[in-house]
Image (cartoon, rainbow, N blue to C red):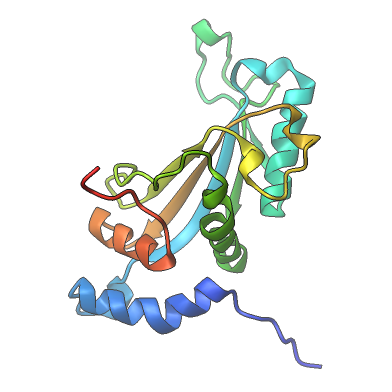
Length: 190
């Protein structure tokens, strides 16, 4: 029996429609120079509440529910006396999930078409959140905008950071790629 796996909608659209358009728009000489979404990283820090077991469990559960993967805990890389953090101390300072391939495209589709429209007072995502390599980061103040989160899970609120790692990206190329996927950027003259 053959494996009949369906390609995610945005992945199919990327290979069939977006790549040729970006190659022409960005005046690239080779198809391999076209910006490509490499991975999506979703992370959340526990900060001062790292000793609060319920808060830490909620962060871990939220990441598991919205990504469908088990989050990895992150330990402190540096000692910071002000925050009473020692390098490599037992309690995690945050959790992280990395999505690639089909799961990445499915998450991106849900994020653009379901999650962002649920953000209160939403006027588009900022165009200023690109780094020097063309990667894009967006922060959410609370996890309740994800439909996977139930009312009970939303009793303890926390923020998330989502980073879109883009291969062959520049700020312009990455912006065009995310716009082609349907990312709603703010209007420039606001």
